[in-house]
Image: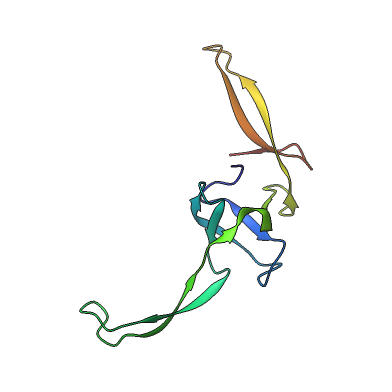
Length: 108
C-alpha cells in the first residue's frame, strides 16, 4: 500500500469528497483506512459503566483506499505516489522510498 499511518490525504470520491485529514488506521487486508474527521457515521451506544448515559456518538468509518490521494508535502495538492530505489553510500544497501509523481519530492 502506498498510504501509511499519519499521512495527509484528500478524499477524491464519495460523500466526503474534497475533505482532507490525517490517516489514523490502515487495514491493508481490506484495502481500507480511517481518516480523522472524514466519513463520520452515527453509532448508537448502550449505557455502560464507562458511559452511563449512553446515546448517539459520531465516529469515523473506514473508506476504500481508491477513494483517496496522498497530499504532496511541498504543494499540498493531491498527487500520485511512486517508488524510487536509493542506494546507501555507507552500507551499499538499496532501500525504496515513496515520492510524489507531480514534483518528485520524497515523502517520508
